[in-house]
Length: 503
Ligand code: SF4
Ligand code: SF4
Image (cartoon, rainbow, N blue to C red; front, side, top):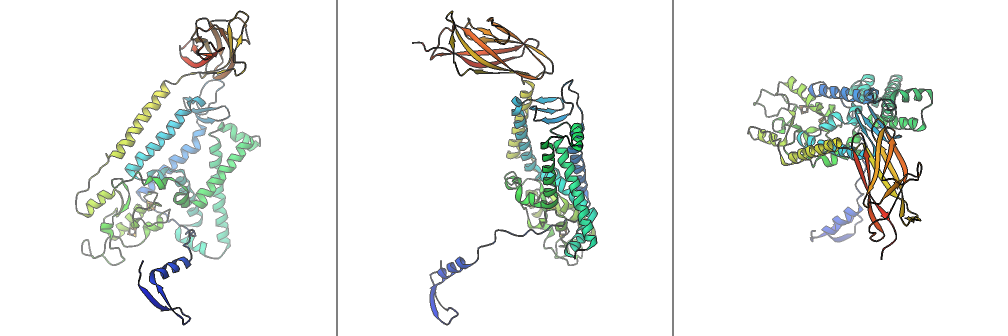
C-alpha cells in the first residue's frame, strides 16, 4: 500500500487529504461486487464434414444401436428363468449379462467392474485426452442426435440464428413445434428403452401400451424422457461445462505428452485475413482468422485460446479448419490431435517424438490388468452355494433333561444353480454335536440332508444339541458346513454355541 499523501478536491469544492492506498481501499469497498452469474450465450454449432465427423457419426450409430437393441436380444437360460440377454432384475435381485448371472452376494463384481471402467477411462484420458467425452459419452451422443434433428428442421447455423433473432412467424412456430415434437419422441424412446433393461422388453412394451404396467414403469419412463429432453435438447454443452464433474478432475490425468485437440500456434500465428503471397513469404501465419473452428464447436469455444475445460475433444474444429486450409492452399491439420510436447518440438524445429509409456500410463495399466485378473479369478472361483447362520437371541441356550445343551439357529441356504441340488449340512467343533430339523423330525442327526430347488434362497430352522468340551466365557466356536453332494462345493459359516459360564 502506498503511503504517499494526496490532496484532492472531493467535487463539492472541499479539499481533503487522503492516503492513496486508503482511498483505493475505500473505492474497492464501494464498488459493486463482481457478478457471479453470467447469462448463457447460446451456441449454434455449424454442420461440418470430414474425417472426425464421420468417425463421430459411426460411433453415434453404434452406441444408439447397442442402447436401443440390447434389451431385445434373447438368451435361453432354461425353464423358469428370464430369457433376456441383459436384464437388471431388481425385483428378483438378479443381474443377467448373457451367460453370467449375478446374485446380491456378487455385488463386489459389479463394483469392481465399475472401478475398472473408471481406471480404463483414466488410462485412455492420459493417452488420448477426452475421447470419451467427445465421442462416446451419452450426453455427447444424444446432443449430437438432437442437433441433427435441429439442423434438419431449422436449417444450419446462420438460418437458425436469423430465425431466432427475427419476429414470430408461422414458419418459425411450425419449425419449433416440429423440432420439439421430434426431440420428445426421441426422449420417449430413450426413456422407454432404459426401462427395458429392468423388465422383460416385450412384456414391458405390451403392458405399457395396454395400461397394465406397474406405476414405477410409467414413472421412470416419464423421468428418463424428461431428463433426455432437458439435457440433450436444452442444457446441451452446459452439462459438460457446469454439471459434469469429469472435466474438473480429468486435468489430473493429462500431461504434456497426452494427445489432445490442439492448435499449432507456432505456424498459425500471427493470424489475420491478409493475403498470403506464398508459403514462407507472408508475415501472417496460416490461420486466416475465419472462425470456422469456433462456429462448429458444440461448446462454443475457440481452441486457439489453448487447452480449456470446456473442450470435449470432439475434433470437429479439426475438420472445419482442414477445409479452410485446403481452400487457402496451406498444409492441413493446423488444428490437430497432438501432444503439447510434440508441438513444442515442432515449433523449435526438433523432430517430434511420441512418449506413450509414462509412469502414470504404466500405473493405470498395471491397476487395470491386476484388477481385471482379480475380477476374472474371483468370477471363476465364485461359489454356487451360499450359507448364512443367525443364532437365536433368546433364549441363548436351553438345558435338556439329559443334561445336554441346545442352541437354535436360523440357517439361510442358497442354491445358485439352475437345477435342484442335494446338500449335506453338518457342524464341526465338538464331537457330540447333533442337528435337529424341527420342521421335519425331532431325531438328532450328525448330518442333515437337504434338497434345494433350483435358483433359490431358503431359510430353515436348525437346532444343535450336545455337550461342548469347554465353554470359555459361556461360548464355543461352532462351524456350519454346507456341502453340495453332486459338485463337492462347500460353504462354511463360523458361528458359536452358547451355554452357561464355567467357573
Ligand atoms: S474446441 Fe474443437 S475439439 Fe474442443 S469441443 Fe470445440 S470443436 Fe470439439
Ligand atoms: S478454422 Fe483454422 S484458419 Fe479458421 S480461424 Fe480456426 S484455426 Fe484459423
